[in-house]
Each structure stands twice: as structure tokens, then as C-alpha cells.
Image 1 (cartoon, helix red, strand yellow):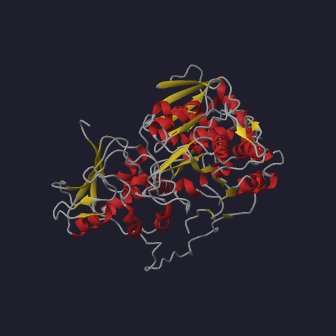
Image 2: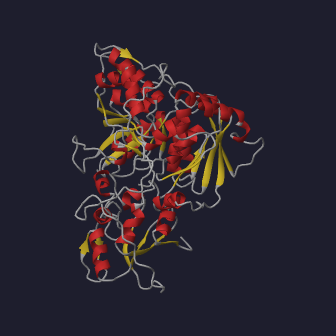
Length: 553
């Protein structure tokens, strides 16, 4: 109706589709997801926003942003061996933490950039969301041109070549902060559990895990997602799986593969990587976010079972992947996920440790190799794009009022012009409170088009300071204990205004607008915290909730 094209289910994850079709050097692009910065791997300034910000742009209203600082990350040396692009951002996350990039754009520069593929740069920019960065970007170079040519955009590459001086840093430019990483010395990293900035070099992981009492046995290895599902990622992981198969060994744990797009799925099926994963004991899942956003019908454990999983995803917050708060999720490169899946243990270091083949022979994995781009070009697979009609004015949008999945939005009540006084505190959140804690994903996503139904997940993952439990708060007037959404609904029905108190970097993670819509819908008026993550603070303002910070946190 409004001239917007539609990528049908099965197309893949939008960030991979953007890289393959829409991003280009020098573009300014906004997207309604926090991992939109993936396009920085093609030299674009791609920024994640909430839905209301995107509506402004679609309505031709200027999009505004507080002028960010610029953090420079200087890369020296050359990447080789087991070190991958993912290790760069895992290292940066360990240095800056989940809030260190807030209010800043991260710009990578230096001679080390030349040893990273275009999709590898995309991986680094993608996971910049995990340090709170507004976006991340790489300077234009030949690796980007190669990718543009491979994705049928040769003329854009030629235009970028002609204007390279506009797409690379000025000489002697000044950064607000500079971090230097020597790629010759960068060790492969594994970050986690429960937060993506708890960084462990692979040589220290086993020791750290044992000291902390984390489960050493790995239950599932998962590769793919918008962060790490390029052709290069899949090829390097398959190279390792093939070595294991050559010695009669398969994955010691469950192993899943999530292609980032239909194009990647079709190409790795044609070129044999999918067959290797199948023989390795892996399962190729749908071209979608999948377990990274909790779309995982996990059967091998019960809720509450303490266990370890290792993924090549970007986030590992409590309960995010499988709905189990006792799952210890670690994020790393697809190569390390595959190697650790072969060994089945967190204390395996593929750089130094040996494995045992089916005939009792000892062997060491050779460091991963894989083509950056397919030698025979990409196979586009099925055509999953639906273009809008030339004239959509006659299209009617009919929603069944009894639908449990879709609900047309009604305007929220206008402010009555009076000060907010004597508000009750619905919940004082203890510790980390991401948008996953505020509005869980996974099975709840089927209600994302129905605000009232999805509001039944509001704050159910947040730990209450008062009760010490998730989804247990006390009604301030009756003294009755209940779930957070139920208590909020009672306050709303009784005309009682409520607010929420939280900690630092409140609302980090996904740009999920429901984390702002739900509190407003259930009668919330203010969120009072020590500090906010950028996108969530904007979302709260757009939905009419006061985002306040303590003067003396």
C-alpha cells in the first residue's frame, strides 16, 4: 500500500540482504534493528534506530542524532591462522565493555584493515552494537570493490574508486579516543557467559571456566547469524569439519548452521559446504535469525539445567537463545565454534591441543582456510523478493478484530498537563536490564503485531531488587505478590501511575521498540535509571515515556 518491498520468509536476515543488495560505500542508511551497522563493512554509515525514527524518515521528516564522538581503532599487522575478524570485535568489546561505545561512532583504520575481507569487516561493524556504538565503519578499499563486483554492482565499485578520497580518513585526522590492536599478536577470543564483553583469549578460556565453575562440556555449537554467516565463514568452518571427518570424527555435541540469506544457503549447498556439515552431524536451519533471537525449540535440556553452548552470534544475554536462564552462552568465531564442537569441551585449545581420530591416532587441526568469495559466483537461489505494486492506493489493509497476532494501534492518552506525583514503583530492576529482559523474544515474537498480547512479557526476565526473582513484584497498595505484567495491568485499571527504576546502560541490546511500547501501553509514565543505551532512550521518548537519569547515580 505504501510502496515498500517485501522480502518473504526464507529470504534470510535483513542485515545480510542489505550487504548483498543495498549497502554501498558512503551511504547513510537507517534500519530498525540494532545490527544495522553491519553495512559498515561496505563503507556505509548504517545506523540502528527504533521504528518511530524510521517512520519520521519515511514521512520525510529529518532524522536527528546527537553529534557522536569518534573512536578510532587502529589495526596494525596482518590477520592469519586461527585469528578471524570476529576476534577483533571480541577484543574491542573486552576493552570498551558493553557501554564504552555509547554516543560514539567507531572508525577502523590502519594497515591491518587490508588483511580483512569485506564480510569480515561487516562482522566487526555488526557486533559494534554490543559496545553500544552508534555505528562502526571501515574505509573503502579493494576488498569492498571485490564484494561489489561479486554481488553484481561493478558500477558502484567503479564510482567508489573514483571518489576514494571521500571514503577514507583524512590524513592526520583526530579521534576522541584511539585503541590500537596488533593483528599479528591478536589471539582468538571467546566471550561470555551472559554478557558479550567478558573476554577470554582461547589460551585462558579453560582455566577461567574451571575457576568460575562454568560447565566445561559443550551441549550445542551454533554457527551463522547476521554476524557470521558469510561464504567465507561457512567455508572456513567446513574446512575444519572436513579435517575431523577425514579422521573419522564428527561433532561431539549438537551442531547447527544458520545461513544468513537464501543466496548463502544456495551457494554453500552447490559448493559442498552444506554436505560437509551434514556428514559432520550438523543441522542446517532456516535462513533466519533462528536461535540467535530465541527461535529455537530446544529439546536436549530442561529449563533450569546448567549447561554450556558456544555460538558465532553477537549476544549471549541470560535466556536469550533458548529461554533457559541457566544456559551459559559463549560467543566466538564460526571457526572456534566448529573446533570446540569437535572436542566437545571448553578447555580445548585448537592452537595447541591434539584430538583423537577413530583409529586412535592423534591429530591437530590445521588452521582454517576458505575462499573469501565463491569462485563460481553466488547462486541467488529462489527469488524471494516481492516488489510493491506501481500504485498501492487501492490496496486495503483489513485486520480481523479477533486476531491474536495482529492488532491495529490506537493512540495513547495525551498528557494531562499536570506534574507526575506520587507514582508507585512497579519494579526496581537489579543489575543488567537489556531489551530482552524488558520484552523477551523467542516464542513471543509471534505477538509482535499485537501490542496487548505481547505486553504479557513485559519485564518478565528482569530481576526484582525486592524479591530477588524474575517476574515477582509486590502491589504497593494491596501487598499482593504477582507477575510484573499482571501487577501493571491492575495499576492501570485502578488509575495508578507507575514508574520503573533501573541501573546502568538500561535498555542495551536490541532496538526492540516493544520494550518502550509495552510500558506505555500498560500505564507506565517514567523510567528512572543511572544511564541509558542510545536507541532505547530514544524509543522511550518517541512513545511518550519520560527517560530520566539520577542526578547522582
